[in-house]
Length: 67
Image: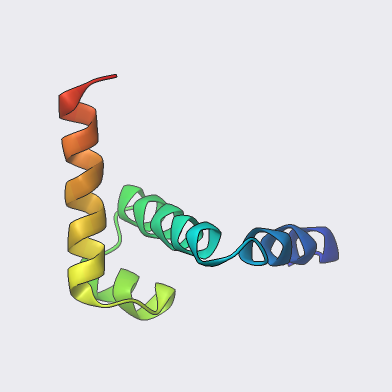
């Protein structure tokens, strides 16, 4: 990872809990999109399986509900 990438991630995390939560959600969704299993996602992102499930479910609901 480059220093610029580290700086960008650090800045995102420095914005408080909301920003850190959004970052975790993005990591979960990107990993799921890449075909990773829920257990692997939970382990690599350091969240519970239920967090992975709820994040994916929320994303699908948002898509189906429209803009």
